[in-house]
Amino acid sequence: MTIETAHAPQQTIEEGEHLIGEFIGDASGATLIAVGSLHGNEPSGTFALQRAAHKLKDSRPKLRGRVYFLTGNSRALRRGVRFIGADLNRHWTNENLEKNQTNSSPQISEDAEQNELLEIFEKILSTAKNEVFALDLHSTSAEGLPFAAVGDTLRNRSFAQKFPVTILLGIEEQLDGTMLEYLNNKGAVTFGFEGGQHDSTDAIDNHEALVWLALVNSGILSAEDLPDLENHLQNLQKASGKRRIIEIRHREPVAPGDEFQLNSGFENFDPIKRGQILAKNKNGVIKAIESGLILMPLYQKQGEDGFFIGREVARFWLRLSVILRKMKIGNLVRVLPGVQRHPTDADSLIINTRVARFFPLQIFHLLGFRKRRWRDDKLVVTRRRHDARSPFK
Image (cartoon, rainbow, N blue to C red):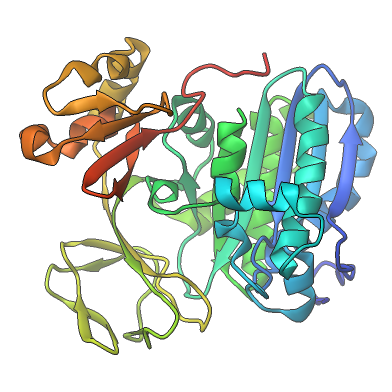
């Protein structure tokens, strides 16, 4: 698949080809992994990385670290579809990883893609001597402002707040099997970025700007060695608008056969009211469960997320959560009535909702326990690993 931009025609991606560029400077420095087109109908990330790789060749001697630019779903990208057999950005569950590692014959296209990426990730992570940063570059079917989606760890937050973009907290915890959750639990600082509408050249520009800023913010490239840094910063600020931190409050899931259809005209960050009709499916109309901002409205055939609802978070709560986590209060919360340690997962708690209903879930959010899943009749809340300390340093 190729695309013509105002800058240059992009290279064709072959099936099974993931490495766009590898640049090694001081190997004892930080590592940056940037992945584009994990969804095959989102070409802008790959095109931006190709453009950045072409320019970065001249800066190799100045790099204080290692840089890897990768294409995600190469087979789907060749076909211009989101995925072929399964969503590659929902494919990183423990069950799938175990199945693929024990089965030498991939069952579907995304099994092959995942195995190829896993081999690359393993080589990168096993040789890291300093902090590892991972970017996942996406785009959206609807028009709207660029934004970041960040798993709620202190390390992720600290890195994300160096960029002039709105930050969404909690969206990854609403989903199972994302690539960034896998990399986060391996110890990497992770940062997801929605650069704009799928087919827009603005999305390519926004992704490229983010990559250059990430090289500087990770310490791999100095600001003095990037003459265009101020332009990239200003362009991303202009594209992103007002900088906010937004907490995801609701995800509207979509399953095959639902006949989901979103009402026309929504863009990212449009305000909505509780009770407002947003969409319909085979069971009838779908209303907003609360007032807030609509995010990532689904205007394409493939996808498991109809929309998200979020609301802005006051900085006070973010500062409070930093204090509480550094004091390791999360390790003490299991002594509360109705709360018990998970028998096999040190980062999960089992909540008896009949007993613990007097403790709002926002308390658990402050401590990093954002992921909520029902297991039989129990509520299990989970926090990300490596919240404040890097395993690579």
